[in-house]
Length: 155
Image (tube, rainbow, N blue to C red):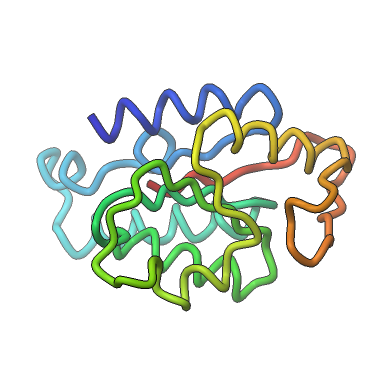
């Protein structure tokens, strides 16, 4: 179900941006291991492919659903934030372990948290068109190259 949701989300985003979806474009560790790749080597391949894709991306869209944010998604948000990339969350599910909501290390790294796919697509379209307005707290809009911006989808 999660993979189907992520694939559907990627299709919606691809109206405005190129998308790297790790489950589709990066390779799955379990499939690599089944094909005979040693687990350590498969893990390194997945890490390297995803890291390279994040470095080439302008934006990360992080799916935050569930009581706890996926540890891989948390790493990806931190990595992208650390290299100065634009981080946006999609949180359609309000379950959280913390009574105050998201961990501050996650929430503070995100420029926006959207609660529907439609809102997310609207925010991304606004980024591409340079018309974001007040939805982003500091008003900073990334300057994209003339080519289509790239999104790294984390979910």
